[in-house]
Length: 309
Image (cartoon, rainbow, N blue to C red; front, side, top):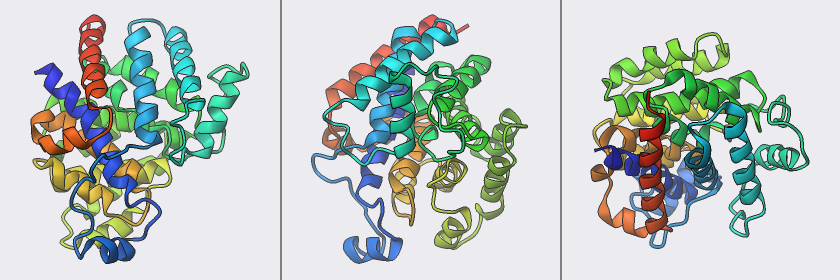
């Protein structure tokens, strides 16, 4: 079962990312013009994911190496994996400026506690947090510590901190099988006191989740370029379709804003909640590096057995 959920998280985020990559930087009216009135409905052949998944992989690989150790050892591994990503020839898929600068600072020797861009609250830390939620499902204190540390290594704003912790915690809640309607209060309790902006963004999800007009709700929640909006839009996408991975991911991809990050976060939550069996087999085969992603999920399962209290 745990391998089923691990693959759900990893493939859920990667496929959501690849879906959203096709529509990023395109407004919804143009998406509909290109793909039809319902927007994009299928994953392209030979689908490529973006920096969102690449950085999620970096986090996952670091946790496989050092997830049971102290925070400085974990962050040493994270820094090494981030620097590998920074110089990878595949790091050519519109990576975020803040992530690039934060990792460059780490490479120059700046400690992870100081390497992040102080005023940045972009969604780049939240988009890569899902493996943390998976590994520390049963240790929320460690989950919060690791999410905080990995987040501030690039994004120093308190709202980005809350978004990163929140994105990881939503994966934990989904793995726990918590009823979807209880997720918002549970999330707000866990992130309480970190950022009023984040709290307000999540409270807006509660206010619009029952609106009949989904596009009106999406406009109300924002475009997702900043952390609190990305998590809110991803949570909205999942809560609208908690029993349907495809519809949740497509909801996140068909949006005015940062569609790859939103669909990736939504996909990680949905994959954690439903497992790999909820994802179309043909989508699993189309996403790049299928065999590698399966192996990464398997290694996360093994590491989780070591870190679970």
